[in-house]
Length: 122
Image 1 (tube, rainbow, N blue to C red):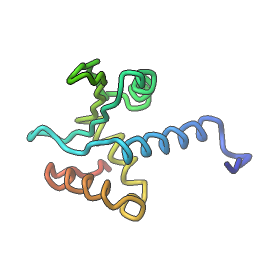
Image 2: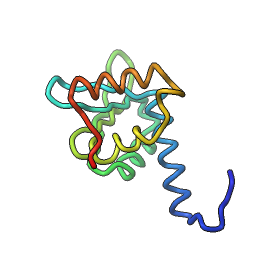
Image 3: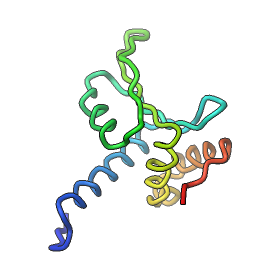
């Protein structure tokens, strides 16, 4: 990691958080909706609860559901909808060269945006 004398600890934390969230969404995220509104969902084992709690802090307005137990699998489900999606997550996703780095995730993200006419907030 390159350290710039003018880069504050907060800026470094924000950059790390943004990159970490993007990595989670590329690797594990679901881009879809409920037929009425778009949503981004992340579902993982209950052992990741501290990570989900951190996501709640980083993306205010996001929600955590669970724990669930289905077919022997125990998991939480983190969802981002509404203002949190439009004002926080979409701008973050738009800032990342997703089309160049992961065409599969980019296609799923674009399909969600098209289906729900989702545009970044100015």
